[in-house]
Image 1: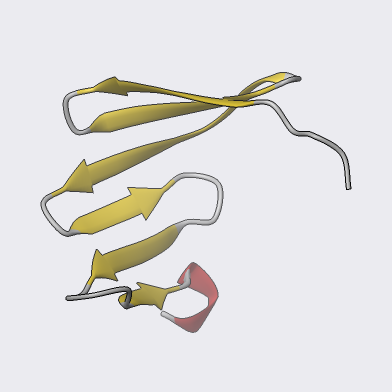
Image 2: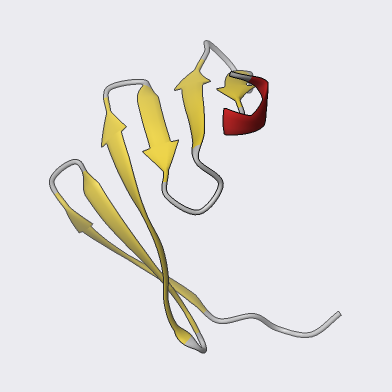
Length: 59
């Protein structure tokens, strides 16, 4: 397994994700809820190490 380059830039609730090939995706995070443009999935952080995720394909 090789090393991977990843970088995140935050602008308030907007997060831009970059890889070695350039721009990858963007996300919105408001409180415990977040949405990612690449996976089109909603995620809610739960207490402890748990989280709940709903993919677009299941909606």
